[in-house]
Length: 296
Image 1 (tube, rainbow, N blue to C red):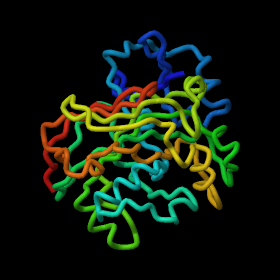
Image 2: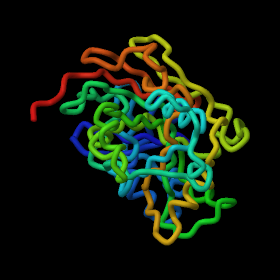
Image 3: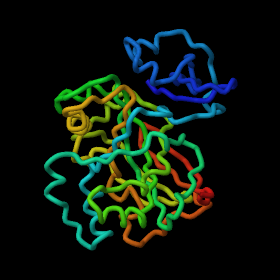
Image 4: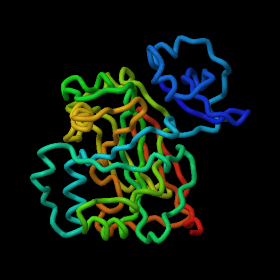
């Protein structure tokens, strides 16, 4: 199943299942459905409250306000490339191989798949990140890596917009990224249930291309099955000693060469007027126009 969230004609946020380019909508939102008995599978059997053409719908992020957002660094090639670009050394720290590392991102900064993205205030080196993310199906704790995928409702395209110059300053201190990744995160367009992806299962992920484009020029990317830390290992680590809640988002971090930072000066950073497309095979694409910073 492919689920979407959209703004209906009466101004409310609703969700629905996509069938033949139509949204079979329910009079509620995805988070409410995840929390309900039976989850998305039970909800999909209900009669639609309305049917809307997908092409004309005002699509929102599938999960417009998630309870929590954790962004990992699960692709080894990205970690090595980013280190080489930042400090000239592509050696990956041994700590990275011990357990999947993540930072918390801002649930209030979620944007839809076609929303404009203003450059963060004060940022000069504005960047995209080609990522994929999982949405947690229901409250869960202390998961086992071998079975944690059973607690995933679906996957979606995730773009963590990043101010590299601000990040360089922040990462010099032990707290890691904060305002450099606080302004915008794009999600969507679909929440795709795991069964849709199963035919593409490969290694620790899926044989699905992940690519970034700026002004229709391919900048870089790779394949989901390059991932080092799986979507079983990431939620298992995140849930240790705490509770993941229905609707929580766990993102992979960029695939190798899935951001401008990794390209070592061969591509310019983003400027107002640029258009960016973040595409993941079988999940769809985020397409965003970059705009000038909003006034402080």
